[in-house]
Image (cartoon, rainbow, N blue to C red; front, top):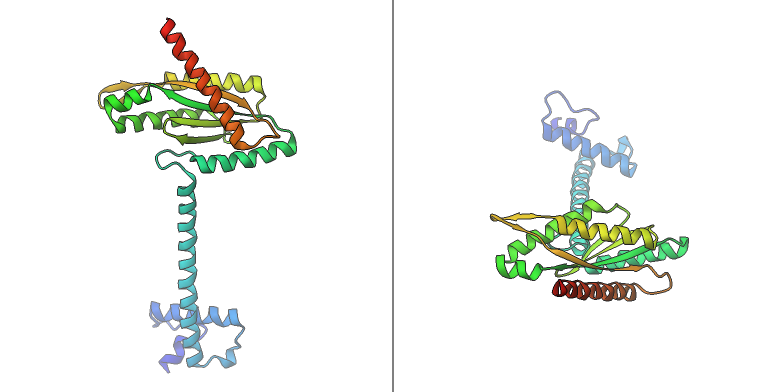
Length: 236
């Protein structure tokens, strides 16, 4: 009988691709459920093939859902404009790093950046120009830091970088280098060359304090530096 040949251990030379696939699914299901060959009637083989097809479909659906979940997690953790952590994810990752630093007595520092002149770019050239500036600044920070460091956009034109495994002196040198790199960046936008300054505050990680307190301290240091820079510009 032709129906019986579909579910034989080898499909005949004249079997169609669909028939061969049905036989493959039936054999796989029979192996999975431990059904002996003697019990594999045509009806059982048909049921096994159908069941195996449903299992394949479910596996594919689960794989798609897992991929969608990974994409959703990535979107939830990252800034909507830039390829760096948003504030929520940055705070979470900094908390993890702080726990690691406490356990292994590791040095690290938080650098809080605020862009000088960013509002002027937005007001004069529009938000698309502002977005181009933010992307360029982000690119600088990514290029100039290590994979072990953390980068986050905390809101607006404010960024934070955690320099892992650097003592206070080395972190101060690196923070100044990042500031200079940001200010040296020139962004071409619709025939205009744009640039911004950067003020920063540096806070060595204190192992017995919470993350938000340390971010607040770095933020305060940044505003003090920004005020000093403005004072220098007025005096000059």
